[in-house]
Amino acid sequence: MPASKVNRFRRKLESLASLSLLDGDLVDRMLLKQDLAPARTDLVPQHERSGGRLVLMEGFACRYRNLLGGRRQITAYLVPGDSYDLDTVLESDTDHAIMALTPVRAVRLSPAEVSVLMREAPAVGEALRRAARIEEATLREWLVNIGGRPALARIAHLFCELDWRLKAVGLVEDDRFEMPITQYDLADTAGLSSVHVNRTLQDLRRQGLIALAGRSLTILDRTTLQALGDFQPHYLRHRVAA
Amino acid sequence: MPASKVNRFRRKLESLASLSLLDGDLVDRMLLKQDLAPARTDLVPQHERSGGRLVLMEGFACRYRNLLGGRRQITAYLVPGDSYDLDTVLESDTDHAIMALTPVRAVRLSPAEVSVLMREAPAVGEALRRAARIEEATLREWLVNIGGRPALARIAHLFCELDWRLKAVGLVEDDRFEMPITQYDLADTAGLSSVHVNRTLQDLRRQGLIALAGRSLTILDRTTLQALGDFQPHYLRHRVAA
DNA sequence: CGGGCTGTTGACGACTTTCAAGATCGGTGG
DNA sequence: CCACCGATCTTGAAAGTCGTCAACAGCCCG
Image (cartoon, rainbow over all chains, first blue to last red; front, side, top):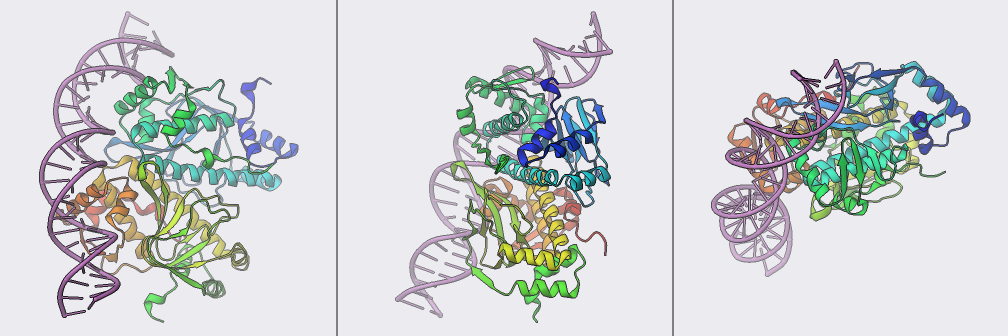
């Protein structure tokens, strides 16, 4: 099995709780029917009533919300291995949509499938609850980032987080990873204009902290970048105990 | 029993799930030992390991985080009836602190007490889980607010939210409520400078949308204020069914 | 080859911050 | 009861960050 075919969702769960082989197999079997979706399409539309449970296998997506004046605010990224709405027992009542930022491969699950999974593999349930807490901590971190830091630090922080998260699912090689997020999307993430994002990126490059060519981001000076973004990865804590 | 002595926590839970009389009594009994704390003190310090479960009975508090350059970002308000960390089964590992914004009266609970409560009164557990989801939605809303809206709309949105939440616990009379939050705190909430908050408040007053005298805020034109802040209270949804 | 999306750049202006100084308010001690 | 003090609020001026507008370049894909 080529490395690119590794089940990153399983891998992520394993970093959050101890899955037995049987648990892992169950997870694998749950993810057989994978759908493709092109970039820029909504995977889960706003106001979806009964939830749009999905697991992202390949590609990037985001959770966002439209607001007055044509602006849009992205509130979370989904990277390979991330899931959406999987731990929600209650009705979800989304006031946000999920959009593919790149072409994606994803699995849609029914509430029934999810409850089977949680019942048959309690460790998976535990992992998902932990993942939910990490997501919440990340949300808080984004609020702090956007509310309290200037543009340069915001982008730096964002890149540090992506680096960390992608590393956790094996998508970073030699301090380099695919970062297929347009400057417009970064702008909507960081609460900046795309023009200012562009200039901020140039600044990071000029300082020798990153190299950004096409969709490939290389972190040249992680120490300085983390200091600049006041990045402390604690909130992304994975596995607490073995 | 004077109205001011109403148990606002119980009242909030009842708006989130159907509590039996016994459930309610159990809640009441759990809240006998109330502590007082002066304004500007940390109720839960940063890096508290095993959680600082508490229920706020009187006064305002906030969840915040310090950041570089002496700035501080507030990520949530706690108003009477709100609780903190009550639904956390896992270790909490806080990366933020809770501070009293005013003198407060609060109840501290041990993990044991919480689990007794959840076991003896499952409806309380359900209410707390709903409360947690509302908190998360609120957090997302704040991110959207701060990331995507100009100062005037940010403050307007914030006031609309406070109005809504305080109304739910009976702290709004004649479109007026106590708003004992300093302009410095508002600044740290909205990601603005205190000077700019001051000017923004004057703008809201000049437009006849609010009256703010001392610590008392009156909403003069709710319709316009909500439109200005693009406020849609859906995320604060209380009781879904009776 | 052409068109659309993305990235880049310049000029200008707006929103917001910083600095600094006063005014006001509420509580405390005399 | 009054004076005083710190905290909070208010105001002005100057500077800076960031946004808008507009145009152009580069790239990918059909």
